[in-house]
Length: 365
Image (tube, rainbow, N blue to C red; front, side, top):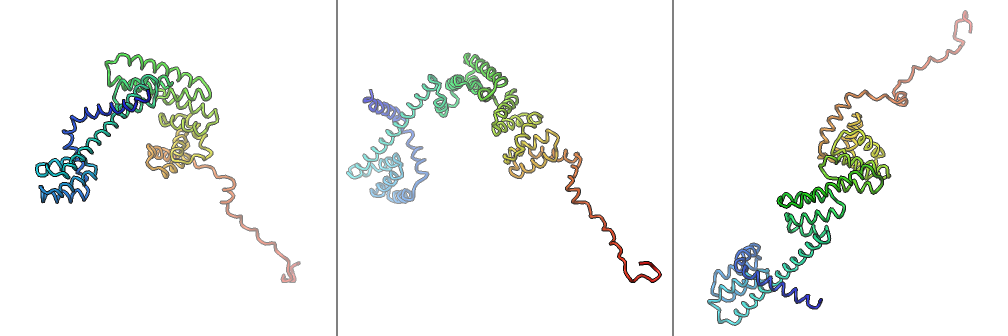
């Protein structure tokens, strides 16, 4: 079996070459024009020389060779064919013309091999996507055929088998928009939604890594339950001691619905240690402090975030709100140490009077 594969590949490439040969004549003119757009100085000089002496042999051979060296094989043949009326009996000219035509045939053959290989690869990926639920193969096919409803549906099937129903439903819906008459897609969408609902239940009632995975699989951007799933994921991860991932989940939840007190408390708690000092974490901390009514602290965090990344969305509005809130807050009480540092020193008592012999004799010493 393996011994005949090279022959089969050669035969397929030859068939593609024959099929494309009929279109080559029509394609030669635009291909030549595109090739000549980036002509080298040698091509330009040879063209000028030939224009001066159209019937001369050497300038024509020089231009043909310069075009060949630039990879413009069809243009090289065209230049020689234009001179056949003058040099049809010249052996060197005819040898050059045969070589130039051979170069064109070789180029077309190699391009045919490439097309055959790409076609075979696409067919393999299509089979792996449809029959083996290979998601990588589905994505490869979709690169070339992004709006093919059958491939989108096949990818949805693969995602559903992989336990990713939210993404599967998205693929099915996209396919149904392109092919609304496909009656099977409504059932597939319903199946994906049912599986997603089960994972959402597991996310909300389960524990540990399995529940976190269920949250991830059930999450759909823009869905009504996006906030609750992100908040639940943060709570699960916080309970597992995964503070960094928990903070990311809470920040995602806050971006969906800002102002939730439970999320705000969690964000403040997870950023109190100062380990996250990037703009996103500082902005989330400021937003959380604002939700908790701590205007001064919120202003400080939001100013730091603005200094690091002035373009963060909604940052200016939140900072303005935090500063308005800060102006209504009572001034913090000074600490005892600060009070002591600012109290002026008490007046020194007068020095004790000493007795002296300078007193009048009538006074007792």
